[in-house]
Image 1 (spheres, each protein chain N blue to C red):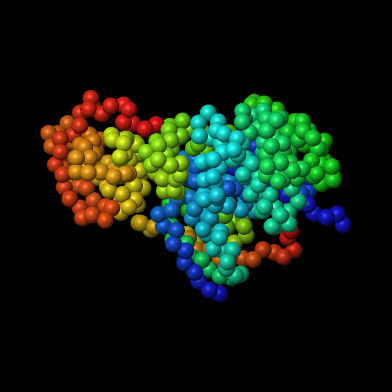
Image 2 (cartoon, each protein chain N blue to C red):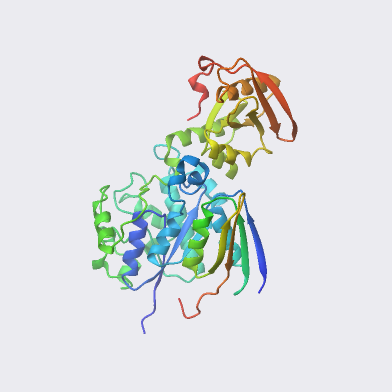
Length: 348
Length: 81
């Protein structure tokens, strides 16, 4: 009896990785999925935080894909290890702080380690030649295979016929003739293949699933690194960068101002670790102060917060300052006028 | 059969799913895990995780301030790869 071959598929939750896994299932290979949580994933967190997103399905697309394919999914927390990818990318960044080539190499390396630990034979990705300017090029594909240590156990079923045959193809674990030659940025071949498989409902992140490809988000990280004097972050930092207005009136502190009820509720969870501001005399947002602040800074922050509440045109607004180990206190302030808030204060 | 509680409140998906997965990996067949959460996404994601990994969802309920999801650990069929 022929040995049942086993492949681990990198499942992002998008269409390409879903198709790649599905194609290999057709070759009689046992496929299981792996999904890495870096902390920068767009889905999940943002939808849960913002009330305006309540109409969107709160599903984890990777789990959903796994369920559609009937495969197991292993979700791996790589938050700590991933820091080095973001902070010191050997191959540099893309248009923003997206270290796409290092990221792909890192994920394939982690998949390769998992494959070895679990007795699997090869790795599947949904990469398509020419689809991404940094990580999905003819000259960068071999870099990912080599630096991850996956070498010829890395199969890209959607464009395999344009590439040198890999071990699974040479050994006949999969039939190369039944793999694909997708090339370029067009999504048409993938959509057609999805139709052929009867897959009609799928997420369409296509590179938009990572906050590091977002310009505003990247600017907030750079501000964080610049003002702290070091390139580093904690998980809470990158979570807080995803929500609220980030306003830096002075180099020594910034304010994170909730934009709606969902964000205010989320920020509540951080109230005890940061100095928190909330207008008492009028309804308004919750805001956190990140950094250090003297009495003059607190006055400025309170005036700024008052600007974002219902009392923005009032002569005086009462603001409660609490958290960060200090007993609550009140400040009565005059809200800043719009022309007292320079656009440079806004980060991202 | 042992009963265990996992407190995943104030954590956003997929963290509660990852913690559920990692906790289940340390439990035995038949053990019951009660997961406490606040992220409404868990109401979808943890049952989905149970379905694809062959664990039994015993129940889920959304209270005023928190969500409670109860599952039973089921060992994989040894005949499967």
